[in-house]
Image (cartoon, rainbow, N blue to C red; front, top):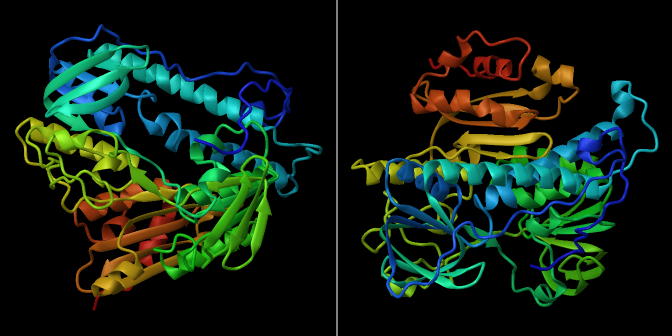
Length: 503
């Protein structure tokens, strides 16, 4: 994976006042994720027999392995590199670690508003990176302990099917092993997609992986893509001090959201000095990320120092040898599964990103619950499950259920409740009054159809609404709650209190 220069051995002194977040000066040793294999044996002429073999250690795979091994099943997990999968190593948690460091940087920028005097501050990316690495090392150690306690075997190497239910592993430490499972689960995840734009691949653009390992601040970061990854990284690096340009081919950022949401996001980026080009396609790329890049677009030419590709993801299924198994994939490369997450081959299941599930760790965790129940004789499915999400910009954007756009597309009639975030007293105490909450309630019944919040701690507001939706409670069940003052959740009573009562 190419990209901007990654300085892995930068031990410069960095600011001391906010050392945990890379703002003040201290020195730390560098850290790396241990990649040595945990299990290594000589190759065997016949496959080693297991009750369960799991290819990939993402959210669903690792939880399945720990649960089944604890039940006495002989279980092996094959992992190419990242113990615990992408989320704790290179994706969800490291990126939110970076985002929070950027939040601290934003407080320094707003210091006068809070009555703080702190001049001559600066961001040191080596310190930001070190904080992230320390967290990752702790998470990896936690996962290793989970494998040890459960009895699940972790095999570090590159796995590929060579026969039905049989996987050959090229071990990271050398040699090979062949493992066969009565049950096999595919959990190989997805990777950042690099479009076939002329010159883009040669420019060695960063993905989120390299961006999270930067040891120096980009002078001008160009972000290709206005989705979750692109927006979180764009705002974070702008707050650290980079000049940032976001290029999005659709007419708006996060283009599937409602117009009031997209306008609020555009206004946020304008206020933070982020240059946003929508309805813009990149036609050609020259140079190399980390040095100098030049982009020719349908709007104008753009020059920068670093290039981040954040235009989508593709499933990791192309080099698995699935043709030997009877497991089919769709046109996008996702493993074909039914609602029980069974593939087209008997005894082989698929979970997470590679199975076409929504690209969220919490959905992978639900995939785990589905497969575990079904392997235990149940009949749990993906049909009708909630898919909540949270975009960790600042402020956050969180939603569950229908948006107004989706309701209109489906012809669903609804009542709307909406309040500005400044109506929530907790937001005023934080000086974080940007945004709003809104809720859709069925026109005929009082069931909640959807909820959106753009504001501080928005993601933490979801569970109350999710539970009401799951239990098909009337929206008045929330307005009747005694909600703690002053909290963000207190705003839910005001929000649902603004919904017009059905006549």
